[in-house]
Image (cartoon, rainbow, N blue to C red):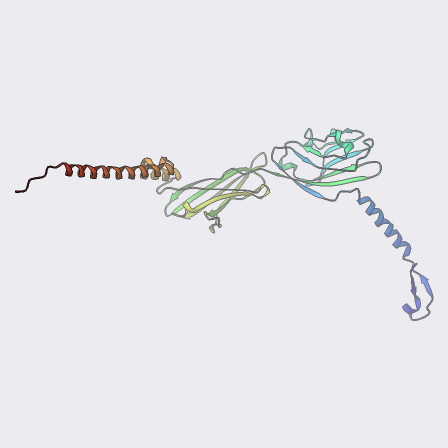
Length: 311
């Protein structure tokens, strides 16, 4: 027991009196100990699960094995509002208590409950399923709670770039779709550095929650050949870029420039580079052989020419 010197506190008698705060401190210590004991059966980690749009995902939940009789298991989506995703009471699932969002879309393997596995399978995920999920398990002696974060992702399509010319400028139009979460199209130089010009951007949400992205950029004529349009999805480490070769003249796309290049190089453009090099070498070798044959023929004629007698 702790004591204080009354004389030291008041400057008077040194009579010792018991500290009346001791019972309260003991209660606090007891509550702290009980809290530590309970936390031994409570999961505190929160894993992040990334699922592709439309696919199934399994949210893990492991607990100390216990008799199935009297076991209670509940999975709930906590945000943006509380929604019951799965319920198991009295040795059987209780689908009647589920939120309509999860009807016929959630399940767990009851055969593995005796092993301490209460992982939830969620079928055909959508952006609406995103958020933190709580796995709650209670037995006769203890309870277990475990958090799982679900994120949904979908890759964006290869950006499509088109252009039209309004001298002295070129208007670039880039679009990409089918992706989630919301992203933004960016214009950059071919070396990867960001283009400083200001673009107009717009996004449209589809019925399945994915996004269609559009971007418009006006640049001086001649710069369009050096620019790329890029879309990224950091959730799945996606980064895709496309460029466009715009022709000179009105309203022309890269097809016009390819055609002009093909006309300039005639038939050689359709052949692989290695085949064109081989053909060039054969032409040189043939020319050299023809020259050697001509020189040999001239030498032979000179040798066969009769020699005039000298007088």
